[in-house]
Amino acid sequence: MKITNVKTILTSPNQNYLFVKITTDSGIYGVGDASLNGREQAVADLIDEYLTPMLIGRDPGKIEDFWQLIYRGSYWRGGNIVMSALCGIDMALWDILGKECGKPLYALLGGKVRDKVLCYSHVLGKTQEEKIAQAADYVKARGLKVIRLRAGLPAANGTFGLKEDQNGPVTEPWNPEEEWERTLEYFVKVREAVGYDVGIIYDLHERFSPDRAIRLINALEPYRPFFIEDPIAPDCLDSLRYVREKTTSPIAFGELYKSRWECLPAITNHWIDYIRCDIIRIGGITEARKIAALAETYDVKTAWHGPNDVSPITHAVNWHLNVSSYNFGIQEDGTTDGLIREVIRGGISYRDGYLYLKDAPGIGCDIDEETAARYPFHKAYLPICRQDDGALHTW
Ligand code: KDG
Ligand code: MG
Image (tube, rainbow, N blue to C red; front, side, top):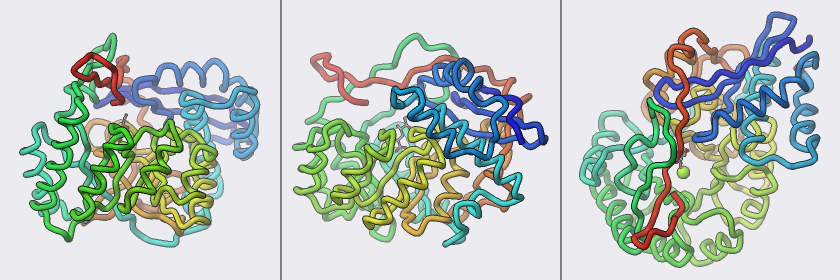
């Protein structure tokens, strides 16, 4: 079998996505997700201009070799743009392999060790009061066993789902000490509203300095967080060690990591309990299964990143990894409903706190290209935060 064409598809049904479709001379094709919120066009250009010429005429079954070729073969190692491009292609190649063998992706990864996937969803709402009310309702109406709160209120208008070209990021205010109080109060109020049978994840979104993060995690400890996500920025490894040494709540980390080497110290030193890389940011299935194996060796569980800015294709890939990994912990189920479901057919379904996927060869998703074309891409940026004095703060 030989690769005959690689197509990038930029579309914006409810927000921006970048898909990859690889066709072969056998008639089999594969699909992948290369979405990188705020930088989609740059990823598409890399695929179109540099990677596609390297793929045409190749055997699609040489997945590991292609991964190494892109990661090491340019001499420069991958950043977010390279790894996202690599992921879109990697997913499509695994999809082709699955279809060729007539088996779902999880079967190629070693087969199922579980049948359903425990998940958590985002509590939304504009004000803190609305969010607290929604958390309780969410649990009752949707049967969620675990919910996720996020520091930083209210969310910027138009962060996701932009329908017009944006010429720069939206700015949100963030004043650390004031927000520290509000962040603590928010969790406590939600805990009081939902009781102790429900797991509550708190995504601190890299917003706090180590000293504030330590004080906050320790103050939250009696309210039993399921895990604390990204309490600090990932840049300084020693800060993670410091936070770990001074706290006892479970820590989940890694959505900004780009490779297994970035994950390595956090895993091997037990600075985290859950590794939660984004499959797109680390270069796809080929890298994810290595990180999962590494984490299993050190008793670290997986909690792959699954917000609404990754498409149903990635949510399906996460599911295949989760059912075939012994050390699966939990899966983030960011909303993938709405118009995107018209563009991507197939994918996971939700029932009573768990995710399911129907058996189909490969990943089990397809792109409706005509529908994708009806939702043209618009350039957009992720927001930024600024403090009272005007200084930039991590969003
Ligand atoms: O594009 C940014 C989002 O992916 C991020 O804000 C979502 O932190 C996130 C999460 O845990 O889902
Ligand atoms: Mg997060």
